[in-house]
Length: 279
Image (cartoon, rainbow, N blue to C red; front, side, top):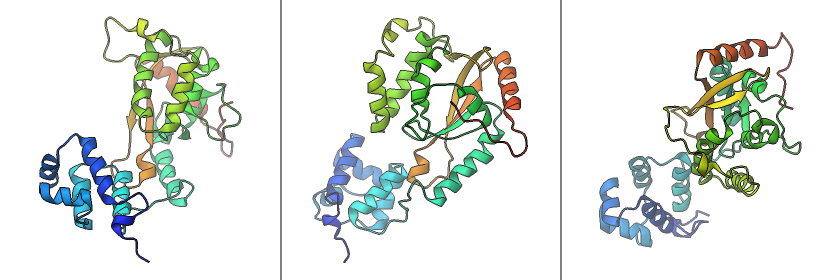
């Protein structure tokens, strides 16, 4: 039996649209102007007196540049067939998409590179990335290594030579991203409660450069100065892949570049050998 839009699993389209509009900080009239409708129609949609068409949902999604997960939620709330698939993480389609990123991007990046989900679990990494993290402490109960847990482990944190300067940059990014993922928020809260970020307010720089590097002791004891470049594939139309980030490590000086390129070359396995996993 078809699901009536006003009786969908999450309470109907109206409350979802109202929450979406309030999240933009717009009045009904301003919201209507942005999506090319009228205040009266927006009011009717929010109260359930009118039901949305697929055309209206598509217009709302495009006007507000909604992520795929939010678009899918609108269709489901309205009880309408969605053009977007709700894929499982373990599906072959997701695996194939990750393969594309790993083999077409990470494998050709000469420096450490990772694919992270919103919780900072490392879904894929290149050989240089594995070498950079080799020997770092990781909870043996975790099947998937987590970059946040690695970075904040005692073994790896001791390798960050400018932790007081780097930690505020890391925390700022973490608080921003933790708003979108409860799992990362829990990891951040646990690290904060453990005192890992104590004193960072006193470590604020008085003359902030363009890049605040992470100065890291490399696998062979060399000093590396790094930042990272974050990216996503532009044409992604899947909520799971859309929530992933490609993190490419970038050297900030020629010595670091040379050393990382050496790590990249040293990390190339012989034919038939396996890439070493972080300990």
